[in-house]
Image (cartoon, rainbow, N blue to C red; front, top):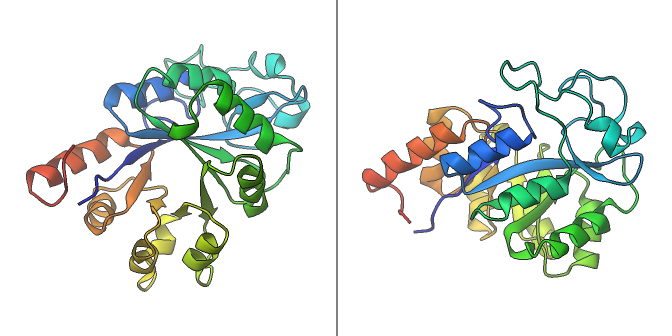
Length: 251
């Protein structure tokens, strides 16, 4: 019986501003198996960790990420309106990897190329991961599956996953045919018909997003899917209970 992995979505974003160093540090403190984060390219070709293509929702700024230099971006307050985090800012990917490297956490890097396809973002990201010596701990995912093809071209041994929310016919066969290592479906996707069982029977790791309710966590873990959650504390508690109950394998 395999161990179910819990990934903190944009860090422990239930309790700290998403995609910030405090959120990733909290995920590590709680004991999450991994974190999920989002990468864009700035005006000066730096890798910035922020979810949206624009800064309005999570910071006190306005405009497109692509129109800021990293230094300009980092002058913004990125507390996402959460009290107690006035010093939170948009980190670079390198800063996050430096924070995470001493831990055992894996890193799911989502390349945000579904709306703006940043030229060269795949190679820049792969090169940084290599520089940090973290190749065996990183999973690359994207809604833009051409981006995953590019990752595979520049780093054939990299772990990759197709991120998707639509209902794609035979997605598990499509992934396997392209040499992709995992499936990242949306929660509502796997609740349709027997899609979760089909995905799991493919033998590919299935990491479902975004899973924040205990009932869903229990169901997915029992079936053998990994979970990506805003609330890693709850997910860790659920997993521990299920291990005690004998429903899941422990460490």
